[in-house]
Length: 216
Image 1 (cartoon, rainbow, N blue to C red):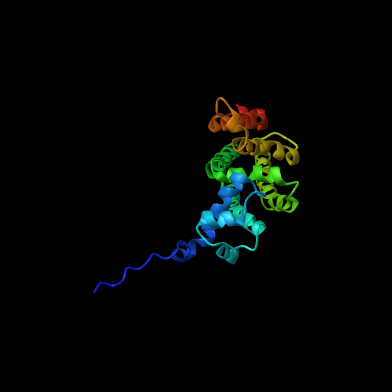
Image 2: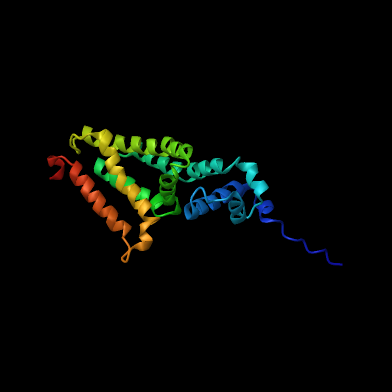
């Protein structure tokens, strides 16, 4: 007599260890597609293939889930950049290039780039989320790039500049590229080429920073 065929276990039973990662991956997709306010936890659970009760085993509420998305997707990229800045032995100009290209590869070209647009769009209605993003992402990014500018000034590669303000000027085009790709890009007759955009950005930034000696 043949043994009765076993029915497959539900997805959330078969892949218990993957639950939090699957939930945050689904949440990232929905946050970027719909925004924070319009994303419902029911929809996140459905896209992740888990029950809503299972979602609540790992995340207290939508705010907690959003923070987990940021910490799981954005902060590791920042940490990667901070390690690079700490250990890089080449020129400061080359370090800037590596940071910008690395940001594009790991963040700008991915769904994660939709998070800045979400935060900007909904900061007025959800100031606590904006404050969280500012404290955990913006402050660290500014600090990291400030160290690069200071490094270049100390080695004589970069001229004397108002670093505290220039660091914001330097990062603004990258934020704009991320926001543009998740907003006005759909309206363009000719799609902007991100690689050419970054080439132009780096050319402008580094030429404005270099001392006459470094330009030679």
